[in-house]
Amino acid sequence: MPEHRVGTQEEWKAEREELIKKEKELTHRGDELTKKRQALPWVEVEKDYEFETTDGTKSLAELFDGRSQLMIYHFMFGPPYDAGCTVCSSIADNINANAPHLVNGGDVTVLLASRAPLERLQEYKERMGWDNLDWVSTVGDDFNRDLGFLHTEEELKPFLESGEIPVTVEKMAQLSGTDAKGYVTEAPGLSVYALSDGTVYRTYMTTARGLEGPAMGYYGLLDRTPKGRQEGGDEPIWVRRHDEYDA
Image (cartoon, rainbow, N blue to C red; front, top):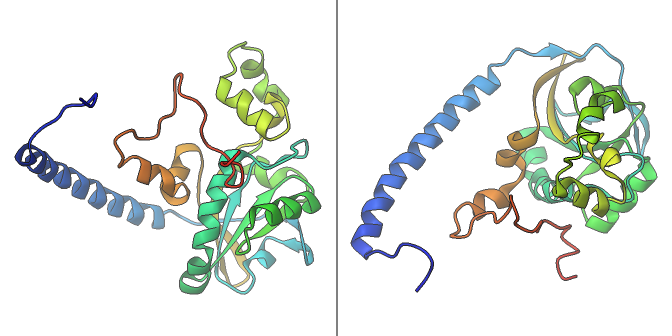
């Protein structure tokens, strides 16, 4: 017998109908959050950030590439990394697949941004096959730091000296070719901008679990399977780069 409650078709149907009601309620709450998200005040970006691109150094405004909206995924690939963060790579897989629709249907330029040298980013992008995305390297640390996606050694000291670094962090650092300090110095995030009359405005940003809905579609699918995500606690760390699963 399976290690789960087994019921009749009638029992399943009755409980499923109750679940549908809850799922619809969640959808409606999501619609309300979308309205609140889009109603946030815009904040003018006053600092002159610069980025290294395959077409030379560009300003934030120039990254819009003729469109009125810009979405940047802050990819964890710091200077000491040998390879991009494994989880960020899974997120980039999702963004790369959706980029053509955002660009052509949504008037949105979508980019990845990291602190590692541009040449290393481009080599990794070619390995991953992200043909729908451009990847830029930040000039200096201000861009990520100002958004809270870059931490100082002083800020990290309590965590690094606690002696309780999660095995997940150690493993992900190893997979990126760095140590725990090098890994957690970076943080993932999504920031969104609007360009109006030559002025750039920041309109939205999120990080951590806020990335699940828009950029980690596989979690939503796994949440609908009997075993779910199979992570946390003593569960093995299963996420890999898409070209590493066979290994």
